[in-house]
Length: 481
Ligand SMILES: [Zn+2]
Image (tube, rainbow, N blue to C red; front, side, top):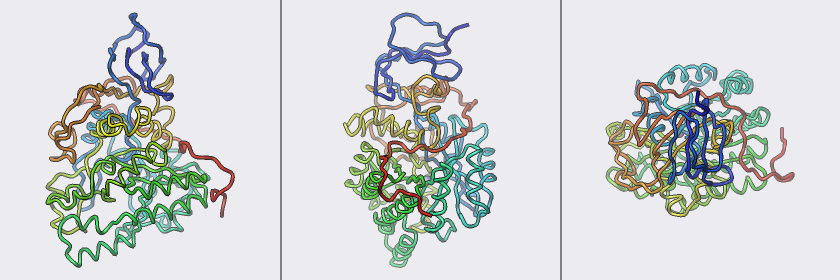
């Protein structure tokens, strides 16, 4: 019997203290040892010569929507199979999707439904955030949070918008949820938009028949995000709960979170590549509706502030909000922003986009990329140290890239089930050459290794750990009942 299942030799491994040349020894799905590079032979079933390659901890896309039910029998283009195939081929080894149960339905039922739906289809490991469409309609909501935490779900999603769809949490509901978070260690994930103002402005744009997708931008100006971020930060500070802002688009939001963290508020932001790389001028194009996301992409100044916040830590997580539609689905809006399908494909291009525009263009270092795409999401989502690190005892989840190789984005070559890419034709470096999940090769050179045998497992997550919060005794972070 050989001692190791897999040994990866001579690559530049991005460890927690930074990149170092190392040999990585794997058996039983775990990393057993990380050692100095050694020219000798080793006792292993498979050896990968990784000289010249960069080895990252497997990426965690903490915000995806695969097989998202849109009502009326409609669904997003990416299902659990294609979405997780895109993840595997993109160097992403874990994803976190959402439950979708209605108001008042016990959280455990929503979770069971999604686990059953995903069963056998996932190429990467996966978890779910529990959506809470209405706190007050749940019986014993704090008790249900504890119950879900025992079932491996430690993050709960609230909306500060979408009142007409029955999803909007009031300030009092958020306050109570954050109190429950402080007591349980759960993470409160917030979609921060001033729902009432967005509804008002959307209605105005519809009434004046504002042409094209630019009406989308004009109905959701940046202050509608940061007003909600500021309000939620106050609630988090007063309760001492853990708050996590999904898909941040505005530089002002990032600044507010940095200030709040500075006085001890347990807050963290997440952003997505579209907010760093796309400009709001896309909405003036004839096909601008293809780029519609919620919130919309904003100005280059916002992107610049978000890049800065990523390296400073207030925006600690890069995820994708992958929510794929075909151009046919997008075209069905017919010029009415009330009917716009909002979302973009994202998981497969996450790593090369951030490697190219972040690392290669000098906006972040390799260790910063590993933090934002792997260790921070692992910590805040309760997966660390099982996931998010290359070290003994961790799952052998790895994304290996050839830093000298480039390829042009072509939606036809990606696993996403759509007919366009917002980055079509862009030359990118840092595509995953090999993706390894628990010691097994799941994708190689953009192709699935085992298309007929998805091996992803449901992840039972633990309490959220807020990365690098400044700890101070004073400030607004205190118990307040
Ligand atoms: Zn989302």
